Length: 189
Image (cartoon, rainbow, N blue to C red):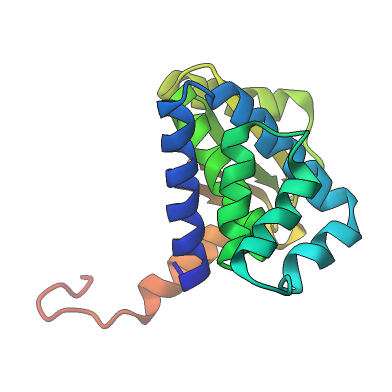
């Protein structure tokens, strides 16, 4: 984990804890989703956050208050003000991602990312959904994509766990096994 990722995780943890303490988790979660949509949809906002706001820390906090004061919960506006004071608004996408992971875990939702070598049918997606539901529970967010580099098969992540049933994964494991030196006395007969 690099330095920015560690900061983002710490910021997200602080925001989530503050939202819990103020009984505003639902509102702050809605703010996080709205902020993420704003970030994706507005090059001006990305520029505003990434360029480093001029002036004193208090002046940067006032800029945030003007921008988001009437749209987000007080907890979220205060949090964004702290980021502005520290000149960390450019970390918004990392923080929103970490916050959503924390909220998913707290709500018992599994984050499932599935990669297929070719376009999957509903049956293939359904099989993986069933496997995940049996192991982790029925509540999940699923993202599906096609990755031709897998050659054949599928690779999926459930939260932080990786399951690789792709031909590319099998070849990599075979290659790794062949490059390991054989231990004396373990030679094949």
